[in-house]
Image (cartoon, rainbow, N blue to C red; front, side, top):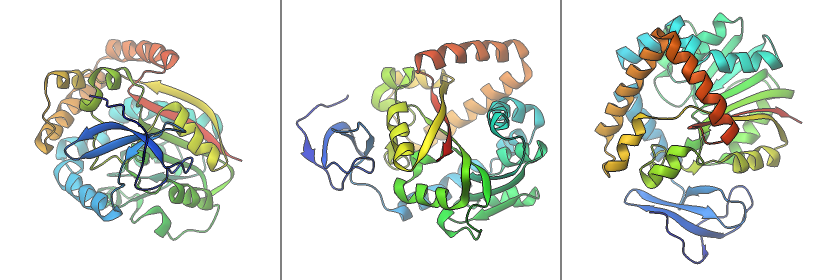
Length: 307
């Protein structure tokens, strides 16, 4: 349940507004989330160490990201059209081709789709799953963004898919983004939407409420504030999709690693069904129009430009 208690002094200042005051938001065995009293950012308190998240990344890489079924799916052009086509269309409205950096590139499915559209694509990820991308001839590097050996203002566009919620030091991340992104460059961010319908229904059982993996959870307002803090102007903010499978969690309090693996397998099957069924794809498009208008879709997508 959401707990509302008097403000208290958190372990470290809010990364968006530097306030020390917060409310306890979710109190879970794996950790607690607090909501900043001033700006509304929901984050873990105390924040985890980077090494903890890196260890989790290796765990997920070995158990999930290199799953043969997922590899086949992510390098299928039909799958890429459904999973990444809309994002590439969004980028194309800003710029047709150029040099693109995918932060948190994983096994490289999006990189491969972007390369097929004519982009000069690079990727970084702390996970060993980047080896899969390399085996597909992609320029992927296993490192933090801050460790990437590239000249300043190298990239025309930077993308981050389900990455920002994993970041401990948000401000350092954006310092690095600005270092590598050319002036007036484009930034595309996709992250779970804390204001999603399923988030409101499931509360602490919502899939993104994972203190061990997700130090911060964003709404359109808090992500906009983070972008403005680092001199980015949001051009478009949408929400999309609804996680029907997650609704099963409303009757369960279990959040084991095996549960998450099972859920990922079910999601891959659902995506495969979408890929092969044009009627379902059209229904998804219509549903996303409604979810965007209500700002209650499962995921938040923000297109922004550097000032």
